[in-house]
Image (cartoon, rainbow, N blue to C red; front, side, top):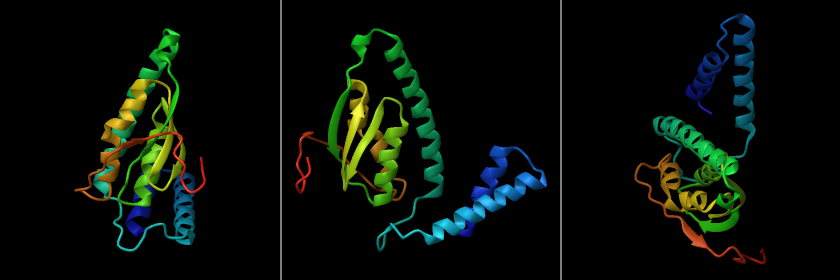
Length: 174
């Protein structure tokens, strides 16, 4: 973690806590110091030559994801409170080659954070997802979220979401 990231975390702490007294500033500083120490102890998950996430693009993505979460929550609430015929739970598997492992994890987590979908398994560039309706499944395959996540580290990244049979066997796994 860079010093700029640590300062950014501390600024977020101050903004979210809304308190400027010594106690809260001290707790924020200790929290950031702890995170800085923990991050330095983690094994590197970035391979040689992999790019870091672009900060401005990542901040824009977070706000876009929050908006998508709000829209999806409204959609799921309407489906749950409406006629039960609208619910069509399903599992599906797909392949999406992201620029890095970090992007793949962010994509899987973004799917899970969006109401109506849940990432059940991630193996390499393949994911298994549970969707509440056909529309939430379709949203994953449209690839808008995948494109945005891929572009967090590479501006020119282009990815596609390829549907696979759910029963795909890979190295002895079902």
